[in-house]
Length: 155
Image (tube, rainbow, N blue to C red; front, side):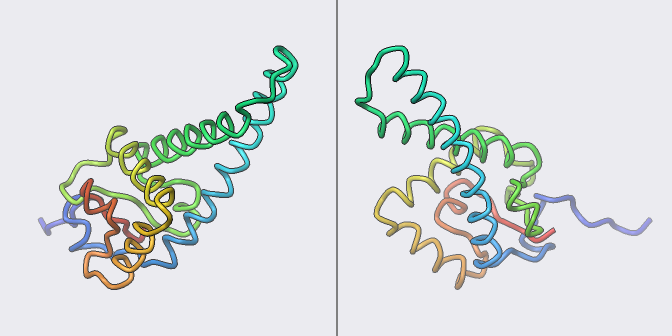
């Protein structure tokens, strides 16, 4: 019986083409638009409820930022742990997998999403370094990929 190729996640970087910077960037833009729309709608509804019930407009920006963060973490955590693909990843034919074998767990997906969010929050310095790492590294891993043991592959 001929050997079969390992499933996604098992030595994925050795058997599957890795996704490059522009494909990953495009997927992230799609996902950012989706999460931004969802967060904006939820923030608008919550803000209207708070204003009507308490007549208080203080803290609106904080609530909006918190809602944005929660939507971001839930969206990426859910999709990455479900099958390794967000809607943006699906559109551009890429998938997040573990380098060690098993699919991405919900915990790993949340940590990875938090690290990506944090890299943008820290004046883009880690995000720029990550972009350089994806573009020039042999494993095409960003900082957050290296920390949680993931790679992004083409499907």
